Length: 279
Image (cartoon, rainbow, N blue to C red; front, side, top):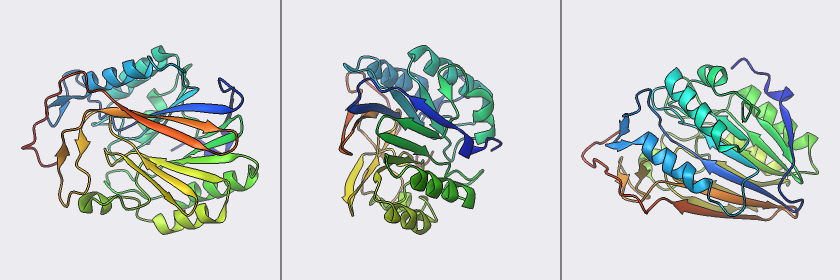
């Protein structure tokens, strides 16, 4: 990626001084073609239903985090569609790459007045650090030395800020054998940095297409459902779940507390082809 991640702090004004409100939309797997489907599900249809539900939130989010695998085919058409859609939602939106994405193409097309490539957000009493765990043409993830250094420096420079760390690949096992082989390969190095800094309150990711929410050593580790197809928790091999598409809403309080809830779009019928054994 060409962007200097250390020079992109962004100051945002949260809706209230005591709470920062965020929405995570992840793993949309948008295709170049509007009719593109993942396991038989039209990913634009489900993505738009998720975003429409976000726009009906009683408290409008201060920012939207799009946490990877935004496109299935890394096409310019997919990223242009996403940029246009996020822009019209009128919520400041920030993205990271997943294993299906191309970070260079994302930087080219996912940037406009409301969609930003910024990776360090200062919001009230909080900082949000967005890390690139993607490796081009690989399914698993890894944080290179520059990403680990960026994380370390951000946590050190802003000791007074509660910290939310965001990446695509899971840095802890989620209990699905096939998924846990394609998570963050250098999770030990990542965890060592997290453990050194007591201002880290939560780590948030996508990739696994399912909910995960666990407190480990005072840090909350969180994964969220996809805006399209879900994966079955606890599965040994690839398995699509019957749960509906969804997203996560988070309240980050000035005292370091986090409240989050998953909303699913279960008022629309979705068709999944369960005979397909991969994506």
